[in-house]
Image 1 (tube, protein in one colour):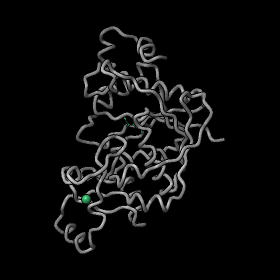
Image 2 (cartoon, helix red, strand yellow; image 1 turned 135 degrees about the vertical axis):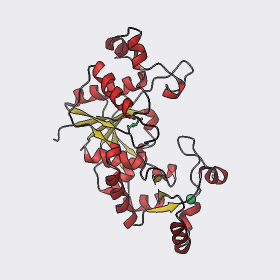
Image 3 (cartoon, protein in one colour; image 1 turned 180 degrees about the vertical axis):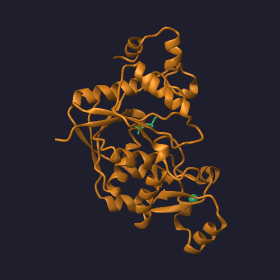
Image 4 (cartoon, helix red, strand yellow; image 1 turned 90 degrees about the horizontal axis):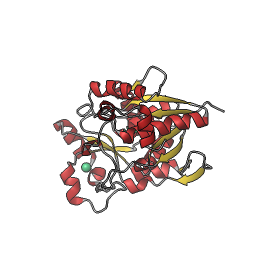
Length: 281
Ligand code: GLU
Ligand code: ZN
């Protein structure tokens, strides 16, 4: 059997908080249980929101928690060409199409919402004629590329994946993926030419990741990842979805809500063990 490889993949768009600590600790614990290694990956494709100082801070916070990883760390912002190649493979098979809609175009026409509550793309540009596509390309209109999800699902056939949970010692279960509930997702954004979904799938394969631990808030999005893995000829890792830390308001702890960062807690005198205990370790 292959040696298990896991990954912790934070985005450096702010300082880490307790929710990240929980996620990291679950990942390193899973690596220990499965007898594998955890890699670190910096998910900084969103170059307007991510900052190098936050990447440095991630290293510092994880070290402080006593976690370690092999070098080199994979940095997504160095890999835009690789993501573009993967998208081109899908383009050659006519599995993605250009879309020129703005957020408000979509919001005004959408009839359904996806599992995250965002409007499902009403497929306005799916049927643009070649003539229109050429004209818009020549005009240089900002373009994003979307997955022909129905076509892709048809091509991929039955989509199943293995989930371990709710605890890491539970017996693996087979689950069906239903990517259709996301509609025609964007794989190449207008601003950065890639997307979270595309980059994460390409890099999990590039790093030979065998087991993915992530929060339950990412459970539904995994359906898209399983579809992309199938289309791109990658193997599908085993997944574990961990609990989320909730704030006092019962909502997920989010950086945007100013929950205290690990750095804040550290300067208030917390130790790494205090953090472990606070998140249930
Ligand atoms: N980069 C994502 C985040 O910080 C998670 C990565 C993943 O599990 O795919 O939420
Ligand atoms: Zn469109």
